[in-house]
Image (tube, rainbow, N blue to C red):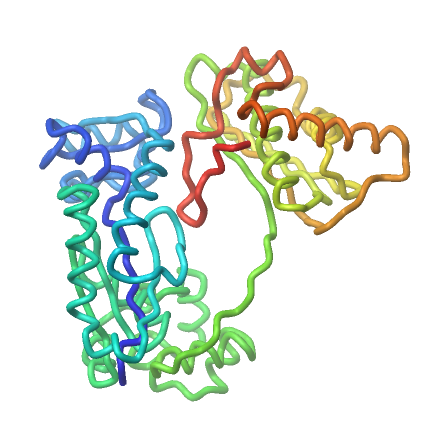
Length: 397
């Protein structure tokens, strides 16, 4: 069975960029945070920090206790995107990219004449990154007969690993893994498999097709059955479900009045991204995490709209007006998306839509945030500190 795909995963990417840029951080435990506050959490940790038990989601005060000498660095999203683009140029000097999966992952499909040289090409990808971008940026590369196994292979040796899975290797490599080591199997799916009598990867690979269909459903169960056997399957088309922004608030922004403006700022950015992609939202979800006590979550259905002004009015209705607790994190989610929505027949909504289009044109021409609600100046730039691993931030909106 040939190696048809290579999958590249940058190791501890955000922390590695910081170590590449600052030689004083090299070889030291580094934790990257969204804001400078002891109550925030690590969004990335170097391998030196991970060896002390620091991981994504660890509170800073706890991370300092686990790892004496920890360097806490505020995230620089624009820099991470800049380095990401340099990495793309470097690897494309070796192989064309089939798909950029996220800011730190990409996949390559090998041509028939390239497949016998998969290992050499994988090593060339790693060398290109070190030579053209930075020697402290490490990548793990996995290869396999299909996309699924190539992705699994990248997780087997980190950092700076290289694993190729062939048909002959399948039992030897897969059977020693845990179920949750396989791409697409989280804790909930593991519990479902356990209820069906599957506790090991060996049992999973030997399970009959009808049993996997019971676990995943007819289509996904059959795909898992074939993926585990190395069959090369076409990808399933995915459709956009939400546009969202979240932000961990710095201490000076946690008062409810400032936190509400932060939420509005997040909504403005999410709405601009949504319009750029050609969608309207049929729902709005607000989530607030407080320093103490229970979270606040509120949801409303909308007549599908892409007008920022309409969405801000909806957010006001969801905001807990009498809440006085400090807000640690705010999140807004635009959902129930409708593609290709036209202008409304109702004059007030149509006016709000045309206003949104006009502001978009101005901001595209003269730069993001050239025109924005004046009150948002009180909270400055928010909504850029978090880079989701499944998408790149769009700094043009």
